[in-house]
Image 1 (tube, rainbow, N blue to C red):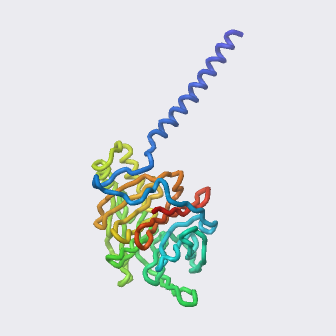
Image 2 (image 1 turned 30 degrees about the vertical axis):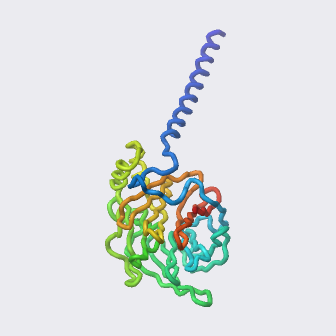
Image 3 (image 1 turned 45 degrees about the vertical axis):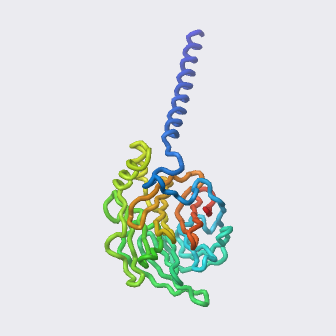
Length: 306
């Protein structure tokens, strides 16, 4: 009987130690997670103008936008324009509450990932690089023109923005369109209706590693993780500074690039707030930033930062 008790106590001790060990392992993993907030800036006096960790407002979006994947601004700022995956629909949203005001259906299926309005044209792009210009006619119908960009499906285009200083659209590639360790951003010349053969900007893992090694206090393993995680999911150009703001849903990151392509700033987003950030756009004067997040297994959200 005594031997059985001793044996039982040994088994119980083993189980408790194993549980404690698992808890310590979980705690260590959690401790190694990169804390949300600013990670690195190119200049000690660089001031990032938005407080990403505490948005001014967060609004739930309707079920139709559960997989919202792009944001743009209507020409007069009256609406936010949005699109979702799989359906070529232009959603007009109230920028104050996220409610859908109206919809226009392209009646085209596919993996639509980005939307951008330039003058009277609403451009939309699929992940395979196929681009559509949609002119909204007076009767509410669309005059649709498709463009082939020669980007392959593996390029996985995830973001679309307008570069006013060059009158070009920027197509941000999440996937492979060059070397495996590079992310490319291509320019579509609106006047020539053609994609430029070479990327406007290329960001490599080494570019990110070098930036963080010089301008952050992160450990080597953290630097390596961020460098590998960077996968563009949304892009917007600031209307005043012309800096590029790039979301990466993988890793929950926001990068700011100078117009030259140099990295200026990197911030880690709170994954509990930004579940799957893929849409980003500025107000006309650049004083407000809108970010949208897909629902994942919860509710899609629209964030306002001032």
